[in-house]
Image (tube, rainbow, N blue to C red; front, side):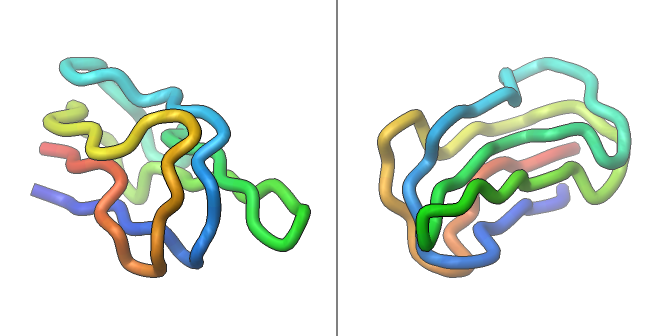
Length: 70
């Protein structure tokens, strides 16, 4: 299992990852807004989305687990 964490404190604008979906390395999983800028969180490796732990509008802290891949 690979956990994909938030790189910084921010608000989740969109979640592109869906449980059960196959993703490839560098696919966008989540888009965050922080400091009035958008930050895309990418898949570090290919795999299947096992868990999505956040939704649009959620505020996350640094290192919050956003998505888990298997």
